[in-house]
Each structure stands twice: as C-alpha cells, then as structure tokens.
Amino acid sequence: MAAPELYDTRFSTAERRAKEIVWRVLCEDFFQRYVPADGALIDLGAGFCEFVNHIRCRERWAVGADERARAMAGPGVQVHCGPAHDLGWRETASVDVLFASNVFEHFVSKEHVLTTLREGYRVLRPGGRFLILQPNIRFAYDVYWDFFDHHLPFSDRAMVEGLETCGFSIESVRPRFLPYTTKSRLPSWPILVKLYLRCTPLHWLLGKQMFIVAVKP
Image 1 (tube, helix red, strand yellow):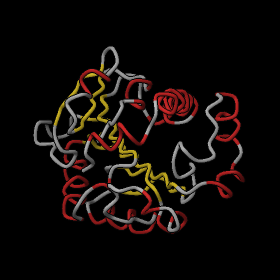
Image 2 (cartoon, one colour; image 1 turned 180 degrees about the vertical axis):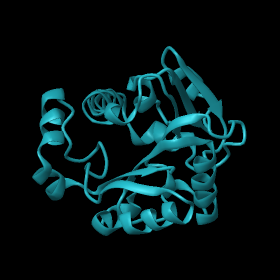
Image 3 (cartoon, one colour; image 1 turned 135 degrees about the vertical axis):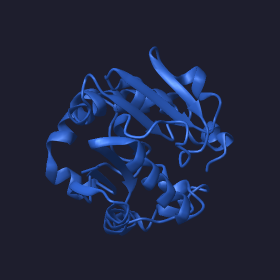
Image 4 (tube, one colour; image 1 turned 90 degrees about the vertical axis):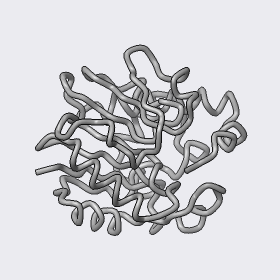
C-alpha cells in the first residue's frame, strides 16, 4: 500500500480542495444512487475521506492504513485503521455497500486483492453492492506507471473475472468512466463535473478509469 508521504507531495493544498469539490459532485450526482439511506457502507482505502464524507447513509466507515484518516473523517464517519484486505473486524452479512476507489493498483499481490474480494463478499448482505472505481490498464497504459506506488495493473475484464471468481454477479460495467486522475482533464467546477457525468461521449473520449457494480446474490 502507499506510504502517506507520497500523498503529501502528490497533491498540493489547492489540488486537495479541487478534489474535494469533484468528489462532492460525484457523490451527489452519481454514487448516491447506489447507496441506501438506511444502509451501512465501508469505504476501503478511504484516503482523504472525500467519498465517505460526502455520501449519505445510516452508517459510514472509512478504512485505511494511515492514522490521519481519523482527523480527515467528517462528522458521523467512523474509522478503522488497518489494511483494506483485512475485514475480520466486521460481522458477516452486516454491510450494504462496499466502495473502493483507486485501491487495488496499490496492492502488492493479487492474493491480497482476492482476499479483499472474498472478505467483501462475506461482509455484504445478500443484494449488497461492491462499487469499484479503478484505473483501467486498457486505456491508461501510457500513464499507469507514472505513480510510484502502483504495483498491479487491472483491466475491466480482469476485475470482472476476479469478482465472479469470488461469487459476485456483475450488475454493470463502464470500461471508461472518469479521467485517470483529478490532475487530468476532469474540471473541478461543479457545473462542468455535472455536465461530464451526463455526457457519455465524453466518458469514451476522456475516461481511463473503469466503474464496476458487483452484487452479492
């Protein structure tokens, strides 16, 4: 997993503010539709907590190895500090939604990825969803290794195969969704983020991250 110091140098204060704006719009205009208001959600590898702070549901957990997540988590967000592939602290069939954004490329082994998927399957309730936002090596091959902490490449096809191997059914796959990074061409002005989300041709032009919705039957 990534060392916290990398993110201190990777994103300036202004870039973090821009990311916060983008994530607020992404949650309100897109991701919220997958999260029931009375549900329990775990954000794996929560990072700066941009997603979990802006999503709305009854119970929200941020999971990450960096203890500073406790300070970054917003009101009502609970924090578990530990590796994303270790969900042993959570009861079986007790979660409605798992979310993982830009997480699995930081793992050092595919066995840890499979462990995460299996544990995700265990903790989800029947009908629960695993939402995965992930750089897609098929479309980001030219920039995928530009970040020091990227270890494993994944395509949408490989991720689907891994999920199905662990028992999930695939609800939807968007091979191209968001640009590779918030440092790229997704603008931070809310109205432009909203327009991007509504304009599917732009996804096929600029999208280098996949978005997969997997369901526990």
